[in-house]
Image (cartoon, rainbow, N blue to C red; front, side):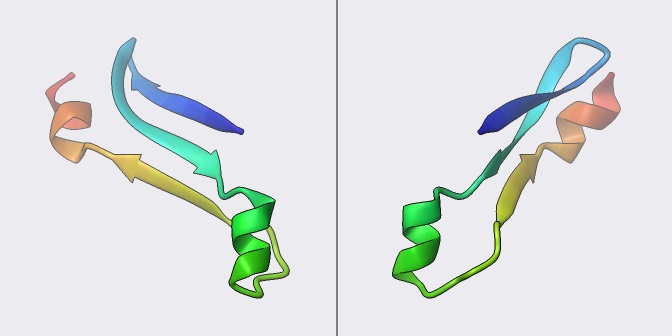
Length: 45
């Protein structure tokens, strides 16, 4: 699952869950999410 982060209609980042198989490969038992946010883009709006 993933989503695009928008500020006033402008895309400035993404967020998503890490695939369960990858978590299992590293012995991680809990769900993990990650995000990337372009602050420069977000504050230009």
